[in-house]
Length: 538
Image 1 (tube, rainbow, N blue to C red):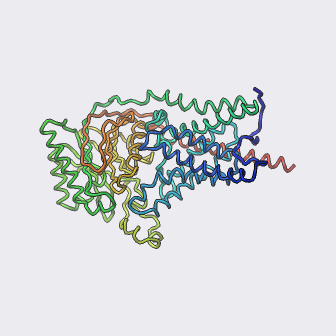
Image 2: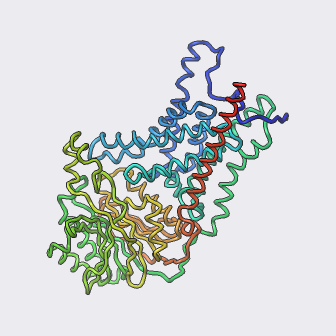
Image 3: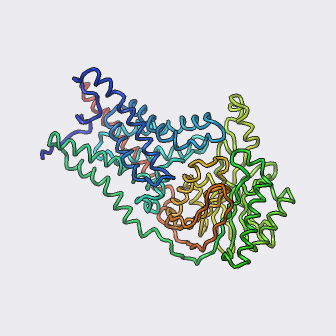
């Protein structure tokens, strides 16, 4: 093997380029290959996400993306990155248009794919740097960090980490949260491309740099070894005793947006399922729970303002004889809140948590006047904006501290972490997926909760109005789950834990570090390019 030193701007004969001497027809056929490969690799990434357990497909998806982007101009990277984003996000987010039509779905994807396009441009810039997989993976994480924050407070759905609930890299969530887990997966994918590229180069020319080969191999090996080393952080051992929890899925009369018009029926369904469970407990068929968790929107009738709703909830609480966390819609001082209410069987409502990360275009409408001018029906769907809560929600239920993360909030790192740092010994993710019918949305959200369980080493319960409800151990295992659009209840003894993982303690610091790595790589590449141009002008 011949070893040579090369510069940052070295040309590469193995790039996906059209051969200059090729027949015109061959050249025409080759031109669309990079664009098609970018879109198809995005589709491959989508297939790696739940409900499928094909997490490993993320690696070849990023390997193909690395092949497509390496050595191209940033403008080409912008376009190819956008195609990758479309291939990934169009099918991933199709559930957003289940009830409102394709317009909002396509608009959301068009905007979110811009972030992936910017990542594509960034990857092309760092693609010729020594150690390019590291820089490229950091650029991807920087793109996810931006997408999780803007516009309208961000939309983190589709983070690479959320596709890895069944994967071997999952323990890394306990090390540095979703940024570190996502970085490891992307690094491994880009590293896979580098190994193939350098292997082909060695076979063709006999020339390869030992340092480049070492980085390529380490880009694959280190994530796997890191995940193996992180395994001791993943445990389902009880540290503060155990509790028996019941998650109620009352079901809805019918799927779709009009479930809201059946608010009383939804409340009655959850009360009825709780009373059915109480009868089974009394008959000795099921263990008595220490507390009960209802889903988001289980009482869209404000129980503080409507005595009939209050009476229904009170009767259910007295029947089961233990505290219930009720998902309600509450109006207070002229403001609307998506609220969790701690309902004691003897005292009634004793504590509340107001959802803090509310969903744009679902719970509040940005740019209301502009959107109303485009389509009045869209503004009618959100007649009154919800207001945000300001404090973490940790209910003390029969001595256990239960952190509340309401539905959409599970996608955001800060909302989940704040509950754990505020003392939560377990987490509940009350959700309402009835508006999304039988789409993949509920499975995608369930995978998020599994990642959160490992990230913070906490039991996570997911009570949902219409499915899939589940109980998740601190190691990410689902031990019980319901079907979709059925009334059911899950009762299980689960561990309480109070220790904090490195991810919990570090918070946003790993993400900041990776964003700085991305900025450093981009700065290095841009600076090297400027120096080369100046040298050429001399």
